[in-house]
Image (tube, rainbow, N blue to C red):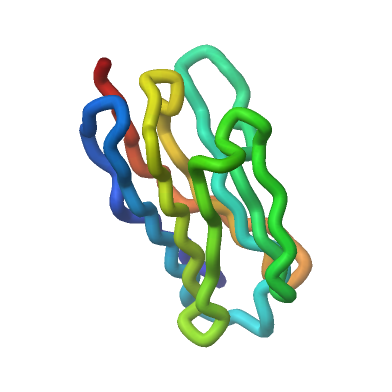
Length: 115
């Protein structure tokens, strides 16, 4: 079994920064893709950013130039540095890790950006 735990959310003002962290633990035999998704009430969970084991990254157009995803393979950890936050970045941020041929979700961490 694999456990995924996010941390780092909170309430900030527009223009400020936050850093999210996600740690995967358990029976892990190599993590392929790690990613961050955002969900707001009544809408689907959308990709924010993801990174492969080799370091290739993808970002949603809305966060390009402001957010940076990175990972520490030795620690099974992925980070999301969020700068210049906007009210529309508000939502629950979920971490997903693809390991052992399936994806695992964390419980989510709330990010609220006030104007």
